[in-house]
Image (tube, rainbow, N blue to C red; front, side, top):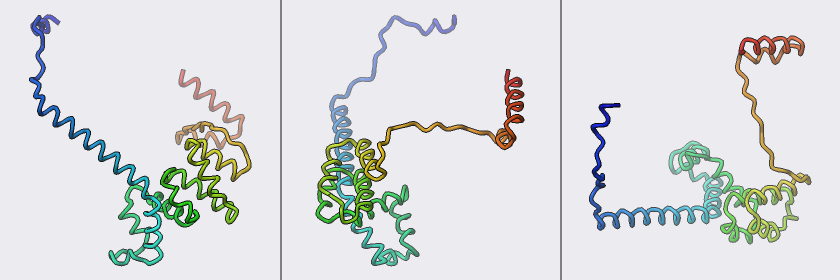
Length: 194
């Protein structure tokens, strides 16, 4: 510790000289990028209905062949490398929800729209799109999901947590043993751990 005392001084540490012009430029660039990112995200969220329509057309017309692909799945793998599931959600929204309700879907977002699809499939021609769109707009996402689940199952669902148990390979044979042998093995393992 004696050697470190040589680095202590009573002088105030000076920061870098502030370049106000550069600072304003950098801060404005950050603001521009964040604003652009927000616009792109909003645009992406609002265009999922249109995207679903075109994806259905690509599948029906086999347009992927123009790009020398073997299947629609290959097309989706190329265009949606993160998750093809989202593309199928968009297509399902286009296929199952009534045309008159599609323009209102951009207000609720694609995740609530996928929940609406579940109700539309279940109810068929009895689907009341105006009622369900109102629920989707007024309820938070999780509450809306619970309302859909209750409609489909007829049961009130509560949020719950899943408890996971981790088993090691050495423990698997113990699960297959009769209960008395399992108990003695458990006692043995407990003694070894202590």
